[in-house]
Length: 108
Figure (cartoon, helix red, strand yellow):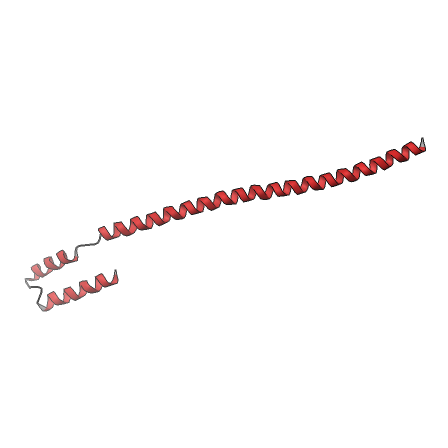
């Protein structure tokens, strides 16, 4: 009987040791699973960021295009102003306005 009890105790210790090892393996697998899930989430977030960057670039291009089309017609403004002043393009005022417009265009 005592031999049987010792055998059962030995088997119980061995089973506990195996259970502990299996619990450790399970914890490792769960940790790896969480890492994989996090990687998947990170990849999705990265793709979302890339998509937003593409949209942002597209909007910038649209803004540049819209800005160029909304630029005022400086020559028409110059002609109207000179006409109101009753002077020509070769006058001092005309030359001053032309120099001003050249600086404006250079700054753009």
